[in-house]
Length: 235
Image (cartoon, rainbow, N blue to C red; front, side):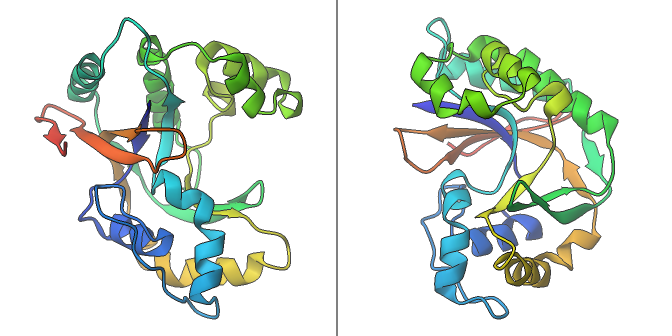
């Protein structure tokens, strides 16, 4: 079993609903749903391009998936999330845009947001005590030979290469797409998300996801609102 601390909008928010329809899965407990054709992409093409993102659900990674440390429990992790969330203010992203990162499409902030990066840094630090050390096999799965020195140091120290100076907030929408496929995929994503992306996005909660067994889809376990409000539990 692995846990992850992500940001994802509430299930009833328009951005979450559109993303769930696009990916073909709602991580808030709903079953996989059939994807539909979008613009000139067939349903089969949409399903193919979203397959890798579908398993993880719509999210932005804050604390990447980890096995629980031997001296911690799920209850202690959820209690720590409650405490952290209560003391942490909401961060506003003025606008998300569609971008292609290393071949895959994702929603990213339109410009630099130091407050968002600082928030992500705090999550990485504060919840590292809950993470069991990586095994040699887990390190190898990250293809360490392909990482930059700073990324490899982050992997060894924090369990994930892309934190602190290498962090980039993103909400993945597809797998990697080559130059021939990318324009049609971009057009489909733009057609679905253009209207909802005109509005700011509030990073107003931490969401605990769980992978119950290797390869299983990541599901929302609990949703912890930021600021001095009670956490909203979903499981």
